[in-house]
Image (cartoon, one colour):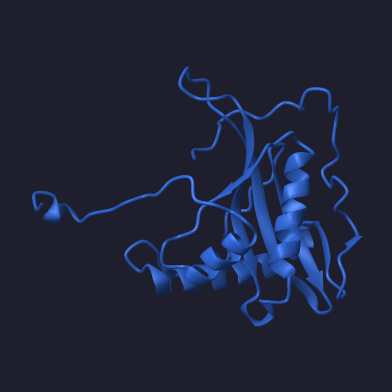
Amino acid sequence: MARAPTRPSAPAGKGKVSRADGVVGADLGSGARVRPFRPADLQRLRELRHQADRLHARLLPSFFRAPRDRSQPALERDAASEILVVDGPDGVAGYVQVRIVDTPAHPAMTPARRAHVETLVVDEALRRRGLGTRLMRAAGRWAAGRGAIELLLTVWSENAEADGFYRALRYRAVAQVLRKNVEEADAP
């Protein structure tokens, strides 16, 4: 789904909602806490994003490569988005980046507000401990506080572990992206 170019307005009847939306300091057990991103987290989020980039490059090298420069994941945060981190006993263990997307005005589309999970990364050494689930639940609470009716995300077909994770959280496919090499375009 394409991002809406406009900033969303406050959900009707909801009033102004704080950025944290009840997430700040939420003790989620096992010493892990979910909270909004702080500028001091930037280097750690870059390290985590590099782990995701390496994984994607290994799974789909025709689409991805791991950048040598670790200085720039796109960490966009504005009125329509949030970055939430999960703190473990040794610091930031993962993060989720989520954005509100309003359906573009089109007569064939049902108007709705949704949230798109743009990035979810949990440190590879800390996976399978419930941290990703905690981040996704916090992203859902943040989105609901802004009037979103559902969360959407993209999982690459080769990423079976992520696909299994999201399906265990009851996410279901709504579309597929198909590809074919142009050299094969005339082949049946």
